[in-house]
Amino acid sequence: AANTLLTNISTRDIENIYNDFGLKVPGSGETENFMTVMEYSSFFRTLYNASYLNRKMSEKALKLLTSPTFTQGIVAGLPRETLVAHKFGERVFENKKQLHDCGIIYSNNGNYLLCIMTKGDDFKKMEEAIANISKNVFHNLNSFTN
Image (cartoon, rainbow, N blue to C red; front, side, top):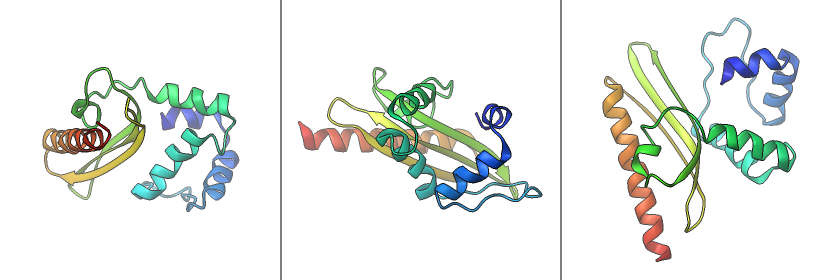
């Protein structure tokens, strides 16, 4: 997703977006781009509320985020028919693996944002941990509305 974006938008425009969101603009020599859960989730809230892009473009971006091929993590913890607009990332940094999954879950009982960042030695275990958290959050939120 990042590579597609970078080929279609100028470096200056990306810097402006980072500045608009109050984020540190990565330097040209930096090999890592770190974002916190709060920073990551702000992008999803902004798309959901159409408070940066117009409604049509926000909906288009969210639609693109509903079709990733990553079906582990958040998605694996939800009923099959549940729509999720999410972005995941995995990497190895300083001999530690990291798996992150963040998105909007469109539930019949109300939409919600869930962002989970993990690190460990085994991607499979991290996928399962994220799926379990997702499942528990979904069931707990739905138990309040039933």
